[in-house]
Image (cartoon, rainbow, N blue to C red):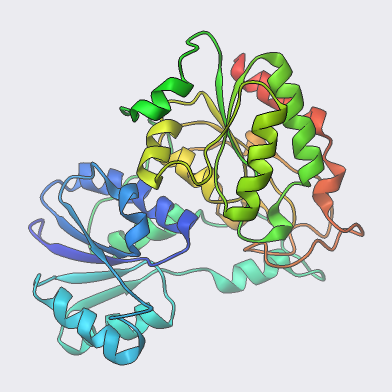
Length: 343
């Protein structure tokens, strides 16, 4: 395919998946500087794509003007004005299939990601499990562009570039002598969350060590928990509900380390080039969702023949306990963080 093409890229959710797309498009942009991209996703995720050259963000409004088949046809008509040469469907759900079908009918080439559903089913089933690393999701994204004829070589390396923070955030970084650790202790699915009481032990130990701690990610209930930690433990700051996503990304870019679940916090840190110590329950890095540029050696998890039993973390643990994360001791996490910060 010629290098003066325009590609419409589709990935509407979830937050972590969209952040992974941004990591791929950053590298794609550098390697294909004359290719224009129109990224279609939810408005809230636009900050992930800041600074990517030759990329324009187009918001999808699935609950209002782009709802249903008629709404998607309206979106198709709007996007068609950009005269795309190809559609890169990185989502492969009903919405993206309907939308890309309109383009196919008008003669525009469509490439869709291979999610590897059969392989993932084999990885997570209880009987006759095939326990092996699957293709990384970011490589599956890149494959779509390769199938369109473009060169994409992913480095799988973290690239840190601290951003300018807001004045409010700057005040939290006044102590230049302390290590800055982000903590993203929550997740969309409860089965991916390390027990809150044990996480509090981790925060207590890290606070006593003198690290500066920043709590990210969550809604009203999680904000209340984080606010309680802020009040109880020194050098601990609650960011939930206090900063925009763009401001949070700038803060993350200035951290030394992130502690996260298998969740969007890991992928946001990866996007900003920050190493992550991640905690895994019923899910597993072998499914391909480890943060871009992160090391499997920094994943904390138990070995059990049933694991993993879920790809997305929406199923409970089957290891014979309510939550296999209960078998991970707080000191294991603290020791790993100390090890990483002293490398």
